[in-house]
Length: 302
Image: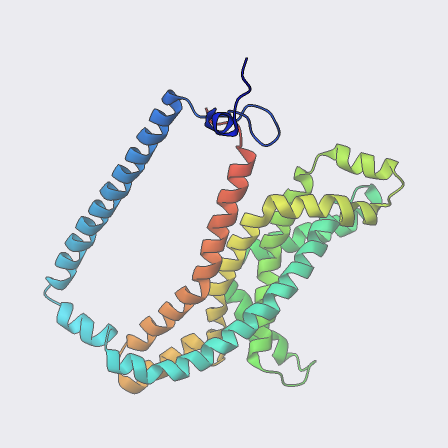
């Protein structure tokens, strides 16, 4: 029998991969399914785009055709007023960002402390648990604007502290209020970790603090990350409430510019700037939530 030449050997189809095992090829049925999914995806995109355009057109038609649109446009959407007031509002927005960063750090630390106190076991820690529970009940039930008034005007009236900027008291009020909410998120994440994790850590000789720091908290933070990011987005908006104390932030600057031009356009500019500030975190929150949901549901979709 003649030996196959090099040309003949090259012409023989090889159904093996690099590892020597047969390489997988999708079947005709699988190829049909993929083609069907692509057609469905294109159809869904076209339908979504068409319905969005129709809805936007109807909304614009109703808005622009309203009898008072000309007055509303002149009062809320004046480009000249927007450009003239933008530098002052941006300067105030920088104060909001500073308060947001400081409050985020303070909220994280205080909330972790409260959540840890509420998860302590044993009757000897009852006073600490009761104190943490009372704190969370109080500040979760009290509106933020009332906390701002009490902290911003009440504490300075005691004359215990030297004169400090009102933005500091606004930051303190945000920390007091949001710590109560975030601590409950942390506590839910801590309690969601299975008790066997703690028992296994203690059996290996780790103390309570080491178990919480190395075993429990990393798992708890991973579980509650989307909820924490949502709270951060909410706090990004509420930093504008420090204007009630007299701090010249973006909202107060918009109020000053609105009184100067006798026009409401500066408020629209400030609102759009807050949206731009929160939009990256909103998109990141959605991405993290979708990623975690896909990882948890992997293999469950038939």
